[in-house]
Amino acid sequence: MLNPQWLRSFAALAEQGSFTRTAERLDLTQAAVSQHVQRLEERLGPLLIRRPRQLELTPAGRALLDYCAEVGAADQRLQQRLSEADAEQGEIGLISPGSIGLALYPYLLELQQAHPGLSIRHRFAPDREVLEAVLDNRFELGLVTLKPDDPRLSVSRFAEEPLELVVPAGEQVHCWADLDRLGFIDHPDGRAMAGRLLSRRFPGGPGVRSLPCHGFTNQIGLILEPVARGLGFTVIPRYARLAFPRQDAIHVIEGTPAVVDTLWLLHRAEWPLSARAELLLQRISPYFSIAPATR
Image (cartoon, rainbow, N blue to C red; front, side):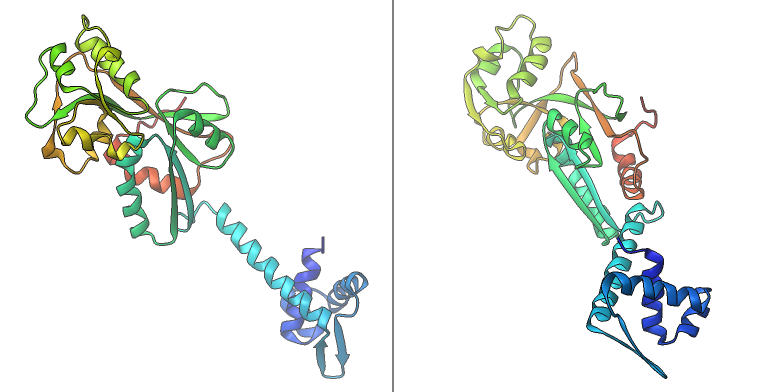
């Protein structure tokens, strides 16, 4: 690797066209500037044609000057990425389950509109993939429904999200027979969520597997569409329900006891969050009641 000081001297010399002026600009002796150029020429061959009142770059010299510009630009990008003061430029990586992701996404877009220099990369994923992505540094922030126990992670309570029993508008559920009449709209976590909620609401019921299944989708934004069309009921996290645009076509059956999941915010514990991530958390905190305490 070429010495950065040699490169600075050469770039300044190409700009100034004089060893004397270059030495003054860099606060070096003229002999030091000459030595830096000599070291480069020992490595790269002739870089300058020295004339009485003019310095001319050789082809190798022009190539080295281009290289100096590339190094300078790379250094600037590195400083920008490392700068804690730069909250409004660069990428924010967030990975989360689909339900909270649906609720977060409009706020992420609002943040990017307010700060066009930001690029927000958001991925929906299950807990295991979220953990792997944060630990592998592919995403700076992650959200999971099960609290991990890994010393490499900083973990804090992000929000609470109840499970909801959702039926078509105008329907009511008073007993297990009503659920059997409506039929179940399944999704990847549907049976597990329904089992947790319905076993508490209807402790004498035969279980979710006894219910007729009237549909399945793995797209979280579409789970409530068949419910809204009267094809059945489902159990879904509240943030996914709130993101559904046709609220007038569905109905939430309230009841006790409630089943509430905690959403946990993750990031690597070995280094501080970027200023961009801090900005994101500050902006969404009023909507999701982020708790400040960490494990």
